[in-house]
Structure formats: structure tokens, C-alpha cells
Length: 128
Image (cartoon, rainbow, N blue to C red; front, side):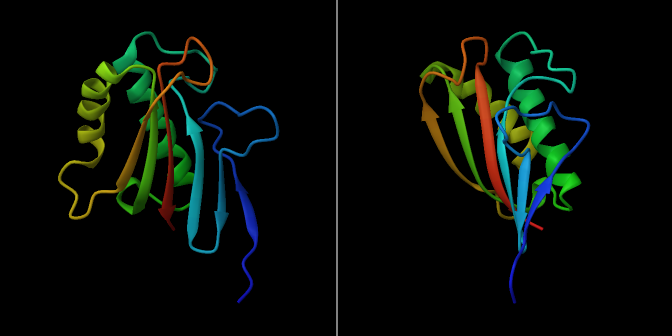
């Protein structure tokens, strides 16, 4: 069976720039691009918790548009600007993933974010 690469677009999430898809489906997997704390109108939320929550909501919407869900997330990579931001990121993480029979694998990177105002970014791979 030959798989086809398919672009996923959710109108409820800000459109990425630079010819980047919000997500790509390939076979029974979906690869979600980095989601940040902007709403669909590209307004960045204020504060770390608000940005983390918005990024998770964006990821959830893109997954649903792809025919997937948070329950089918296999792997996440998160990026935070400061080590001390892990506590807030973990609190929000638990709101979305705690209690699942099998939570996703995760890799956390503490490094400068893609641009100055962004405090958090998350990407994932999920089943469809």
C-alpha cells in the first residue's frame, strides 16, 4: 500500500507562514507542527499559562481536523524558554493527558523559543 502525504488545515488555528502545514497526515499518522499561544486571529496570549493552554488547544483542534485526538497522541516535543517554566507547562500538560491509560512519550527542550514573545511551543505525532 502506498501512502499519500496530505495537508491538514484547521480554520480555528492561526495559519503558519513559510509554506509550513499545520499538520501532515501520512498513512495512519499525523505530524503536527509547532503550536504556540496564539489564537486563530494571531493574537498572542499574555503570560506563560495562557500561552501553554492556547498551544494545547490549538494542537487539539488540529488533531481533530486530521481525524485524530489527544487520546491518540504518541509523542510530544515541547520547547520552553526557561527551566523554571517546566512547572507551569507540566500543570497544563496534566490537564490534557493525566488519567489516560497510556500517556504520550515526551521530550522537553529548554532553549530560546522561535521568537521573543513566545514562551512555549509544542509539537506532536499521533495516530489517526
